[in-house]
Amino acid sequence: MPRPSRADRPIRPHDPPGRHPMADERKSKIDLKSRLRKQTVSSPIGSSIPPPVVGTGIPAPPFGSRPKVDASNPYSAVEASVAPPKPQAIRVEMSQEVVDAQKKGRSKVIVGAAAAALVGAVLGFAIGSGSERDKTAQFALTGAHDLAKEVEEASVQAEQLADTLQRAGTKLADGQYPEEEVRKLGALRIPFEGANLAGKGIGRFSGQLVTMLIDFTAKAEAANDQKDRVQRVLGGSRKAIEDMLSQAKDPKVRWSVFMAYGPSGPWASMQPLPEPFLVKDPKQKDWPAEFTVKDEGRDVKLSRYTKGNPISSPPQLIPVDPESQTLVCPIDTMVRLRREVDALQTVLRGQKAAQPGEEEQTGLLEAATALVEKLKQVGQPG
Image (cartoon, rainbow, N blue to C red; front, side, top):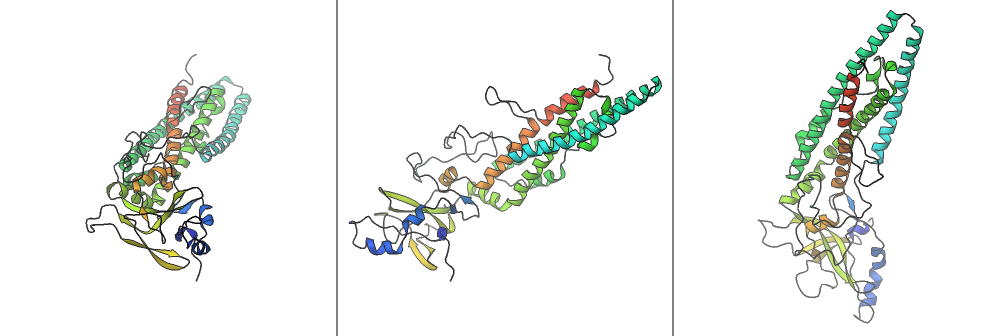
């Protein structure tokens, strides 16, 4: 029979030498040190999360305060006032994938724009008559007019994308899966790319305007790529998200701890439950009295702790408050979703400098407004 993973095997505690006469016998069956070397445990819902840090700062359930949803940030798991303090280095920024995508997109646009500008410059130099120069200038003027219209259309789509994203966040905060918004995200796409610059006579534009066009095109392509990432997380992790949302209405106990003697005193070890159970089950008056877990390929029944000395052999399992678990071990699907959403919001709306010396990031919507204004100035006196 294949040997089960350590995450499925509870570790029975042992007493320090001199405390119990059977300590040596139990020690030969249990390797507590191997359990202590584990850095992560398998989550019952399929994700890998680090075990929570046991310390005086986290009240033991059920006496800890309940976490709340932060209404100002629907993608946040808990309210800032009850969440653990964040290290100063943690700050939501665009992921490296987004930065790389923008650089890659900008490079492609630069090549196309440079080619278009070179063609325009060559044509302008080759055509000598005044009438032909007037035709070339008129061609560039028409191109600027068309580009202004296309940028405005792209800006409208970007606004719809930002609004759809906000509605999805509101539904998540209300405990609903945003099925309609996920479908709309798949249909939305900002209609602007490098091909839009072709045949517009941008070789007659100023260098500043060409630079603005290149930057806007790169932002549009980065926004489309990031939107696809958000949609993949929302659509591909629907079960995990719905399971997390159900915790708000019908929370389930998924983890337990058992007490054992550590190197310098008693401590608690995490143990996933074989089957989650409802915190408040109308069909059941009390929680399960025992649980069947795997140990060395065998089914072992462990009792739920109710009273007396919690350190025993075999160990007794103590249920973990699911809300306190979310505080210490956030569901990694929601962490990823929040990261991807924040990255998309940054591309669309920009980001202010968090501290002096940092460069602000101009969002696509703000860039569109400035670009349209600049395009409409082409051909005007002064």
